[in-house]
Image (cartoon, rainbow, N blue to C red):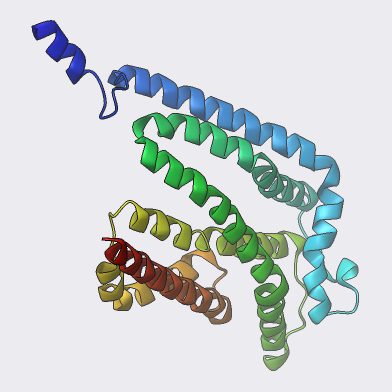
Length: 258
């Protein structure tokens, strides 16, 4: 009887065996090692394509110059190396992202219930779509607008604009990755709603605080200019409102079924 009770205590809510703490640490170590290997492999794959990727990053410069390829300057001895590392890292991160999600999921999923696993899996596709949407919006709308304003301010101050390639790549990648990450917020909110950790009433009440949060996200995830921050904050606020109404529709549908 006592042994049965001890075995029951060592099982999770669905009868799964509960690992000891040191076993979780070992799983975490393995996950980090696999993730690092995947990231390095992704970077190695992307290094030969760095010139092509850089040419794509430079295309938005067409709004401020007729020759984007000659507009940027490299003023440091190691400028080309720094740009190669930056471009390879972010590109490698995108290429290795499916494997990173797989390794992280393999580490996290054993601690979730079957229902939570299904919700996270379904939200994964939505999260990828939102990330791509955020990067595309940043590339086609926000980055050109920000470049035009930054270039215009140089002319307003009577300063000749000569940008370094390292500063431009950092500016562009920070903005694009920031938009992609920020657009993951609705996926996270919808998972919390489906798990009933957050309700429609709570989301509605939190609207004033949500405004502050999206503005802070705009400040942290975009380059330090007001235009980029607002161009991120406005769609994030609209996506938050979408989550509020989805939560309302979901709760209303459950109420009718009861």
